[in-house]
Length: 140
Image (cartoon, rainbow, N blue to C red):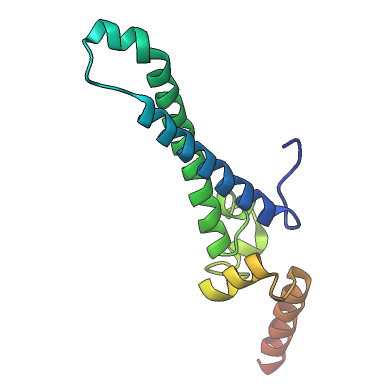
């Protein structure tokens, strides 16, 4: 892709992964439908060995693409970036509070991601936290 995956192109990346998985599964179907198992072993290996190797390679690529798509859909559902998921112990705003401050629930997260439904920006979230802290310190 020669590009970082970020906020503005993440939906396109998920669509790319889904399309890639679909094409790989189609290739698996075609490879499997071309295999004939009713021949002696030696003849079968000469006639279908390359097709079977292709089937095995497509299987491996399909598993990898499927797992990558599943992990990105999980991140989308929880409104988390890969960096936040992998390094939550290093990020100050994730260490200070339990859970993800950007998680708005499954439905709103998916709606925002796939339909660009507006949600609070991270700058607004930081401002809300500061207001809450000032309010609680004044009450003491």
